[in-house]
Length: 180
Image (cartoon, rainbow, N blue to C red; front, top):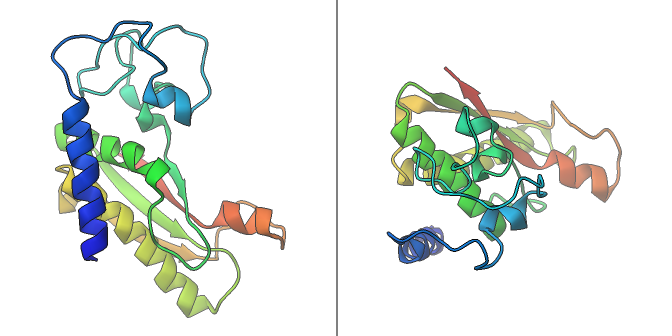
């Protein structure tokens, strides 16, 4: 538990250290969202959106619909028998937490899932642990308890029906589902 807190605190320090009051020059390298989502060919990242998230300058509309925003990533995958959030997913989860903190009228369901291995009871528990790990990160960024609901489906709602590692890896996930 303490290790997870240190990781979250370190990540927050990196986020704060990366903040600047001067805009980035277009040629200063690829943006973070270019590493996590495919480029849409729309050019640079522009300024910041009203939520302070990268990629919001050129996009008009709901930031949740911006394909170059970290908010566009709403499914997070887990290793076998683990509820530890992968470092590559932390930025997107933190962005969702900031978005919820700035939009009190929004709420989410965190749907925890597992692959088919293990007993039904074990998988329900593991799905809950995964969703709770994401919940903690959202709350760390200012989301409230009332905005975040945790549901565990265990192995009951697979997205891949195979019985191999490729299918299992797609089923070990937490999905952020936005509600109004």
